[in-house]
Amino acid sequence: MPIETGQSVEAVQSDPASVMITRTVHPGREDDYKHWLVRLINAAEKFPNNLGTAVLAPTPGKSNVFRLVHRFTDQESLRAWEDSDIRHALSAEADAFSTSQRQAATGMETWFSISEAPALPPPKKWKMALVTIGAVYGLTAVIIPLEMAWVPRSWSFYLTNVITNVLIGGLMTYLVMPTVTRVLRRWLY
Image 1 (tube, helix red, strand yellow):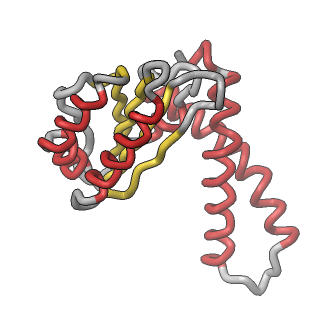
Image 2: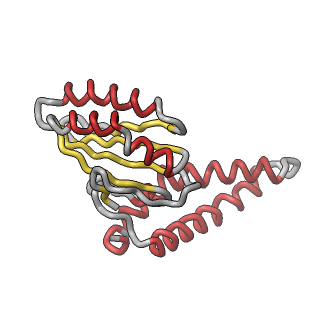
């Protein structure tokens, strides 16, 4: 869901929380943005429970749209960063050479984001759940029989379970959900 600057971001307190800031940098101001970005990341890292910041740069020559994702262990920590004087000052400074759009995510929404349309609100939760259940079912229907054939029977359930979850998590994040989201775009949105 798009979030305006200064607007509260609501989520379950115990869940990790993230916010994605999309900034369209004015032509010729890319260096200003890059210098500002270093200062912003350094400031965010000083906040408690910061899990890191991911920077997604545009494809060279394609656009001036940069995406920045701040992750915190919980909603309260994210809110402390969002409400901080330093974040407000840095955001106001960046408005001189770019325009921003904020999008908060607290759960599966990040699996359903479309890079060509980052400002789209997430799909309805029941649609996300249905697609995720279908994707996980399909993966486990393939992965578990393959593991049973390849993994030695002497391995413990816990070790095999770790392997299964690593495979499912990686495949869901990097292959299955981006593909499924692209294929089902019209139904989801």
